[in-house]
Length: 201
Image (cartoon, rainbow, N blue to C red; front, side, top):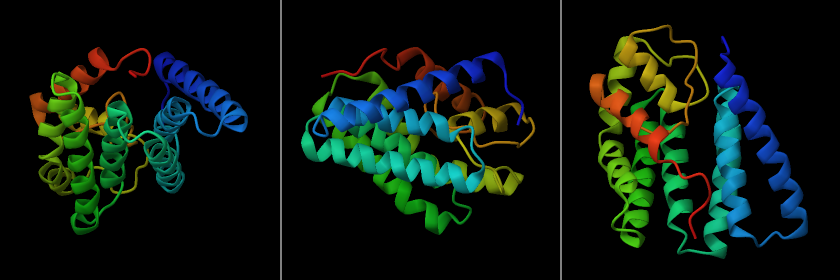
């Protein structure tokens, strides 16, 4: 996988965040914000791993995010991150029958996030595109993309839309997730422009 300067910067920032969160967790394991940031960092780092390691890292992120949700079930941003993580897992699975449960969970988490923050346009957009995830998954497999890649679903969508090399399922500038052609580019653009600099309360 080729790395741009932006990729390298993202990798360094995510690894730094992961280490800080790990240290903070040792001091205060009940900090839901810290657990959410930790999950986010792991999702970002998963974009730079081989498939098996990528999936394991995302599953670790899921556990951190679920732990945060137990501490504070009303954190809509954590719910949104859980939706993104499940979408990423779905695209790392080759069989649509195995991927569908992840898509279903993603939709559920996005719906819950939107219920808690009804005016959040990003949550609404995430829900809309996640509902179309299975169709994109099927199309990706038909085109031969993502057969042996790991990492992030958002970048893989970007790669499909541009008909470029299939050398990585790079997931998260949004992770997210989930329609073809112009819709895919729009999805990634929305993610880049709306991801908040810090966790909402």
